[in-house]
Length: 428
Ligand SMILES: Cc1cc2nc3c(=O)[nH]c(=O)nc-3n(C[C@H](O)[C@H](O)[C@H](O)COP(=O)(O)OP(=O)(O)OC[C@H]3O[C@@H](n4cnc5c(N)ncnc54)[C@H](O)[C@@H]3O)c2cc1C
Image (cartoon, rainbow, N blue to C red; front, side, top):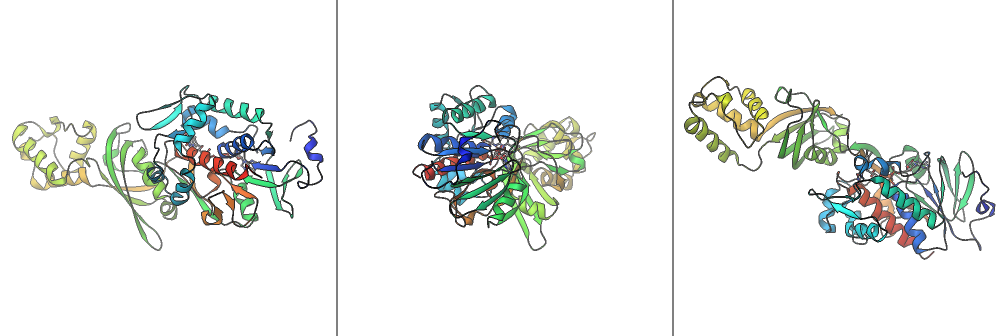
């Protein structure tokens, strides 16, 4: 709470002639965006952000390696929702009202210029998350938004007239409450206390731990395009997930966009199986199995037949991985290529197209850490983001059971939710 006395705290009740009071719990991306937009549209309201940490917006500050990947250059809501393993249907209605094109416009109109990278990720042109923080703080100040740092909300009581918000320092009354506590067990507890169902949070977006001879000593090698099929055996059912994209070999297994996609879609099944799964990797999805066999046969039997197998490169794959696949298939690198047997050739084709790998765990992510789980979506009205159970209670951001892939999608879900909340609160 602020050290100076706050006249608003003297108000006996949130109702009556006073300005409507809105409590925003959580000073992150979603909370700030909801606060600023509500204040811009409705100067009559009094907004207070409660932030548990020393400073708000700390995840925005570290996001995108300090560059803040604000959104993604995908302006078609139908395509955009495909980047979200959970919440697609609900997000479609949010994106119909506020999508990446609107995000770009919003920031640019307020002086923050953006740029698009070749893979579609959009950043501040300054490459600095600091610029986003400066902008948010400046707008919050301009609109008189109160920010209470080090004010962890420990209790929310629904009263006849609104909400009673308790921190360790004070108890205060508000008309409306926005819960935007992100990935926070206490936030979910608060929502649960108000009658909401919480889907258990489990990690999403992480590299796989894989110990396999083929990958040993190959860390740093990347495949620009691969295809993966992940089979996860659960207690009651077996689930299969497929994805395409670049793959990076790490010292503990595999990472990269393809693996992040599989980890996101398979998040719940993987958590249930304690991160035990079978991954079949197609290292060369652009070639059919028959075309690959014909190409290799022609090289081994004719073009390079007299060369040692170990001296033949295969430009479609990184050389060290290619050599590892040859060895894994039982080929002798010192032998002439034309002596490769049919069985070995078939095994090689099999390993390039369907390399079997055992996933034995989850490695820590160096990029985004995102979880799936949170407030059950069916209990929230996505036209307003108001709770269907508690009138006057709103949800935004990661507290909801919504999560996206890496690439600016998670922030976009926060901006869209914050905007829709502000639309709901503009006329109160
Ligand atoms: C390292 C990293 C990098 C990332 N990079 C990107 C990126 O570049 N692009 C992208 O789209 N996504 C990125 N993400 C994901 C993105 O940061 C989150 O999806 C987003 O921050 C969620 O916003 P939020 O407002 O819901 O929650 P948060 O940003 O987590 O904010 C919630 C706030 O609520 C506060 N809080 C919690 N409980 C209480 C309480 N009881 N009382 C008061 N306050 C409370 C917390 O202290 C926190 O400040 C990244 C995540 C990580 C971890």
